[in-house]
Image (cartoon, rainbow, N blue to C red; front, side):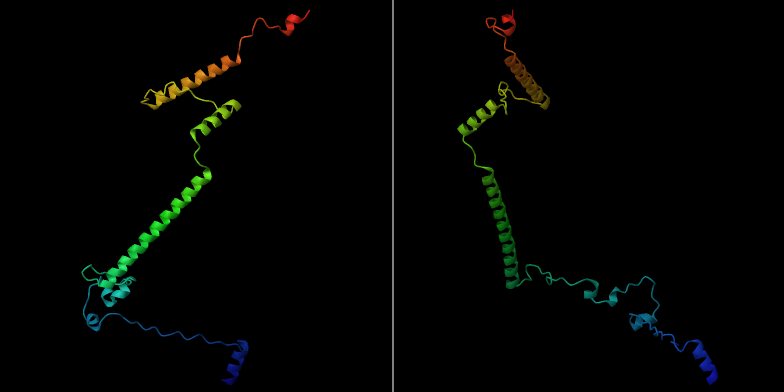
Length: 182
């Protein structure tokens, strides 16, 4: 027997490792002993076996109470919380107002009417802007079609006025280079 074991050890190269021990599986049922003995329907819930905290997480704020159940400290706590939220909202609103006022100040102060007229004259002389005439300002336009047709008419009139200003008739009394040629 010893020689057989020696030969087998030589074949396995002296590195024999036995199989790991499989743990024994033990079935534990979460049912009370009485219900195990009774025949129960298949659709029985196991919810009754769990504590309420295991089924639903506990509210972190504590138990929900009605106004009649609340103590004076609970009421004061709620009041402080509401006030803190309100203060926070007011501070945020003030920050937004200050920021918008700052932006308006950066854009520039309002110009007086005289400054606006002077800058408008300057722009029209330079040719960077043109003035639209207010001929039809008194009329009330009831549709967008009427508004745009009126606007188109004004533009056409301005174009005609610009063309006639460019084509000034020559004075006949003036001498031209061709007339002076021999």
